[in-house]
Length: 428
DNA sequence: TCATCAATAT
DNA sequence: CATATTGATG
Image (cartoon, rainbow, N blue to C red; front, side, top):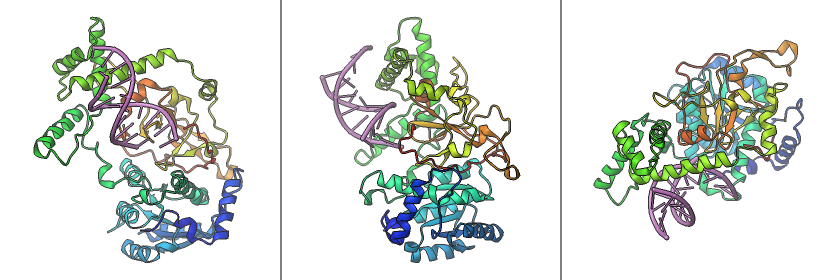
C-alpha cells in the first residue's frame, strides 16, 4: 500500500516545490497555476471525448496517459501507480465504471481520482463524492476547469493529509477515510420509519448476538424531530413538557415507536440548550454580521467560490437568499423545506442550491466573446452555517443528503470548479 | 483539532 | 426530572 505522500515524493523534487510555490503564490486572478508535468491517467470509453480531453489537457502540459478500456487502464495503473499523479475516470464505463474504479483505486493505491461525466444527475454526483471522488467534472470540460484541476486536487489531497500531521497510515482507505460499505447507513431508512427500524435492528441484534455488535445510536431525523416539536407544542400549553409526557404524546398521537424516555430526555435537553442559546445570543459577532449583511458577491463568482475539501463540491459564500431561507415546521403535515436543496458538506455546514430567483447571470469576468449566462442559484451554491441557523440545522444534522430535485438537474447547472482562494482560515 | 450529538452518570 | 459528563462522530 502506497503512502499518501507519494505524490510529493515521487515527482522530481525541484519541479514539485516550484509547483507548490507557484500554486501558493498565485492568488492573482488572471494567472493560472502551472500544470506542467502532472501525470494523468485519463480513462474514457467515448473516444471523442477522450481525445478532446486529452488534447485539452495537453495544452496545459499535463502528461496524459489515456485508455478507452477500463480494464486495461486498471492493469496499467496497478503497475504504474507510482508514476501517476492523478486519475480521471469517466463515470459511465462498460465493465469498470467510475464507482468501481474509485473503489479499487482507493483500496489498492493512494491516488486522487476525479470522476468525469456527461450528466450530473443526483446519483452520479452523490455516489461519486461519497465514494471518495476528489472532484467531479461535467463534460464537456472547459479549459478553465482543466487549468485549475491540479490545483484543486493538490490542494485537497495535500491539505487533508498534512492536516493530520505526519500520520500517514491511518487514512489509507480513501480520501475520506471511509469504508464504502458503511456510507449508506441511512439510505434505506426514510421518513418516520427511521427510528423504529434502527431500534428494531438493535433489539434483534442484541437478542441474536450480544457480543459482537454494538447498538446503533438512534438518530433524530427531521421527521422525528418534527413530531417531537409537535408534541412539545401540544403540551406546552398544559405546562407538562416533561420527557415522559412528550414520549407518551409521540407514541399515542404520532405513532412513534421504539423511543425510550431517555431518548426523549436527552433530546429535550439539547432542544432547550438550543433555545436558550438562541435567546441569549441572538446577536452575532460583528464579523458574522458583516458577512451576513454583505452584498451578494457577484463580480467574480468563480473566483469567490470555494471547494469543500471533504466533498470536493463547490460552494459560494454570500448567497443571502439561501442564508436567510427559513425552514418551516408546520404543526402538522410534512416539513416545508425552503426553496433549497441541501447537501451535507460536513457535520457543521450545509450547501444549498436555492431554486428561487433563477434569473440568468452574465459573468463580467469573462471576455465578451466568452461570456456565458449562469443561473446563479444553481451555479453557485452557498453555505449555511449551523451556528447561524439553529432550527434549520438541528433537525438536519444527521442527514447525509436531505433532498434533491427528483428530476435531473437543469442543463445549465453544474458544479463548476471555482478558483480556490487558498483561504487558510476559511469561515467554514 | 473542534463542535455537537446521543447516551449515560449524577 | 434536570443537569453534567462521557464517548462517538465527522
